[in-house]
Amino acid sequence: MPRYQGSDGASLYYDDVDSEGSGRDQDPIILLAGGAARHPSYLGDLAGLSDRRRLIVPHLRGVGLSPSPLSEASGSFWVQADDIERLRIHLGLQRVVLVSHSAGTRLAIAYAAQFSPSVGGLVLITPPTAYLVDEASDADTVSERRRGDRDFEAAYAALVAGLHTHDEDAYNAWQRESAPVGYARWGAKERAHAQIGRWSLAATTAYFSVTPPRDLAARLRQVASPVLVIGGAEDCLTGVAPVTALARLFPAGTSVMIENSGHYPWIEQPAAFREAIDAFL
Image (tube, rainbow, N blue to C red):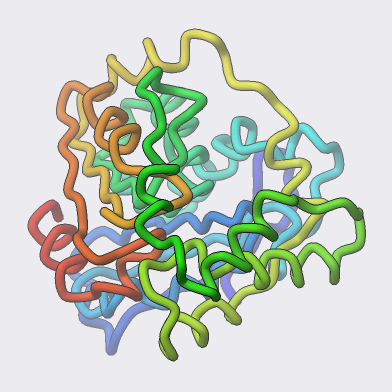
């Protein structure tokens, strides 16, 4: 498996996903997983996006084959932006398009704030936004539409109760118990997808260990590259209004809301997802 040197010299790994070499004539996309600290296998190839562009999918610190950070801070999303810069250089790219999902959008945003001249574009899929925008969350309103669904009710109760252990297996069990909240429907394909990709509890803790600077939103207003924010109209984790508000932070930001989709639009509504991201690319 290919690897590169991180900002502290550590050997970090990545997957190189390319459908039959179809994307070799264009610069690759760096694809960042969320979770936080979930194995990137759950991303698949983003509804066949590798048939258009080569996808470089890093294993973040403490996830998959990449080692745990030597210090907790070096595993934070803010500091791991340095690793992404090293990966860009390793790949020989002048500028890079970052596609990211959920908590992975924090890393993409951290990179854009610190290395904006190297950003060719950003795609932020179902991003958490409370740390960046003042728009009131409407996640509760979205959730109300799911009330009465027995699977949803049980999952929502588990999510609200939270995790009260530091056991890795229990953490993964809790993630899967609360998984139905993340989908607009809880059918066979959603159930199968929820089983893909293990979470690292230690890497999750490290990921959030550094608070980004207070002027982060102001920095993003200086990012001139095009930005696409993709949300799910039935996303009970992020809501709708705060997601569209995030796009307005960027001078060249736009947003697309995928109907009948929750937190994983490339799984739930792959055709609509591809239409949105292909038009942007």
